[in-house]
Length: 408
Ligand code: PMT
Image (cartoon, rainbow, N blue to C red; front, side, top):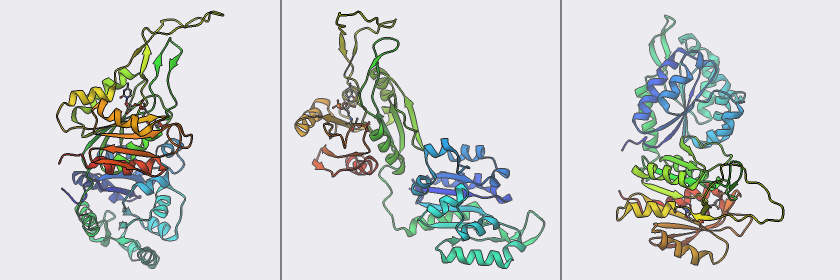
């Protein structure tokens, strides 16, 4: 497996003719298995279109600092946290000056300032601009601050000049990043690299009539946090979610459903090639036997009786279909208000799953619609009680637990 497999690379592209080479650069990085998030300055977009880079990177390209919809999906600070390494290529003379000064008035400079991992800069500019004392001072400052400067190469330039200032070739930039990955000494790539993870999240909504439904308090936060952690671990993630008001985590394939039966259909299809399926969704156990075609009318003094029939048990159905095969590893969450561990143990054997994550939902500070959670994981090799933490941090720990059941 390539050293760059599942590595999360932030690629900042600034304005310069060498920007056209970035499509090839992204293509080569993706071929090595890396995830590439492209950030472009407005000047860069004059040389190569965000659409081309989106097509080759497979991710929406980010250009604006003050774009509310993009910020809602992944804010500039989250972008900086997402990346493991930041490469600015081409780095124009102006970009070098602004980064050296610590400017933070556009998306790229803000991410550069907020990013605390390794930074690489591939300068590209006219030879006289490269030789200018001011550029030399800026480069020296950036190096003193810890950045690694790659190039520039010498040769004929787009403006007709000859000399130093050409961006080094995409293959050389890939090689530099491979050397960084090797130097990290991380010889064991993520067990989730290239794996397909399916997650159900949120509540389901079971219609009573055209305007009313049965549902529950699930906000989707736990399932979405797990999806984000799985992407960060290098997995391909399918997130099947009931109605929630959360933005889709970057890199996740989202399937929106309403009722339990729709969630089952989507989960069966997604699990055909899945390595792991985690049922975080709070699925309604019952639906009405017959959905009224018109709005139910109030009748004063007369109680309304609804006949409920059981919904299919999604995770148990997947377990039955799996039979004796090892894939996918199956995980259920157990939301309990009393005798939490005893009920969770019984759910593990009844549903035929590998793991159950026991969740005490009688507490207001964890479980439903809260930012933190506190669970016990019941798995093939015992039970592990985890401390209270954010749902995102918990998700990373849960993936470590589930990885023990993956087949090579
Ligand atoms: O969404 P949040 O606000 O972040 O809240 C998170 C959570 C509390 C919803 C989550 O942590 C959690 O505990 N999810 C499980 C909720 C639940 O429905 O638990 P259960 O004990 O009723 O179901 C057990 C398991 O069977 C669950 O994995 C559930 O997805 C699955 N199930 C249940 C019923 C059904 N018809 N099909 C299922 O697959």
